[in-house]
Length: 142
Image (tube, rainbow, N blue to C red; front, side, top):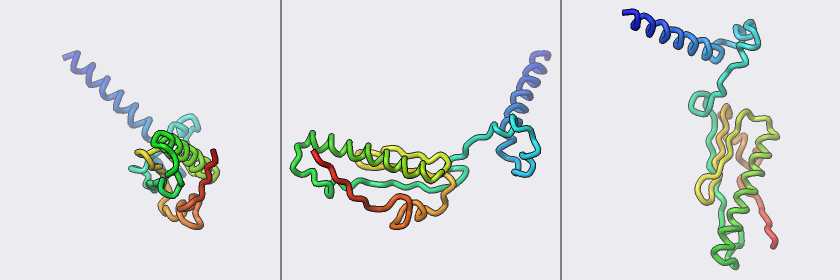
């Protein structure tokens, strides 16, 4: 019987600590401002599934890059270089805007996945007047 009570107390304490650690995420801003700063700084960054946001998949059109004269291995290396440079350019442009936790990763052979938590309108990011223009001219010289 004592083992059951001990287990119940331990489980109760673990659940209580979990609720207390998650509480700053659930409280309104007016209430959380009244709490000590050491307690409210322990907040989780909410992702696309909980906070909402935009999910963009950008593809590199290899046919427009002019790699026809290159061999297969050179073409693959050049395309890889173009995508890596594009990833860095997209990261730099998004970091300059001050967006919170943008995720920019490579997707497949010629894709760039951009996830933007909190951005409800993807046209603000993508488009002719957005941060990331739909088309860009890349010149590569060897």
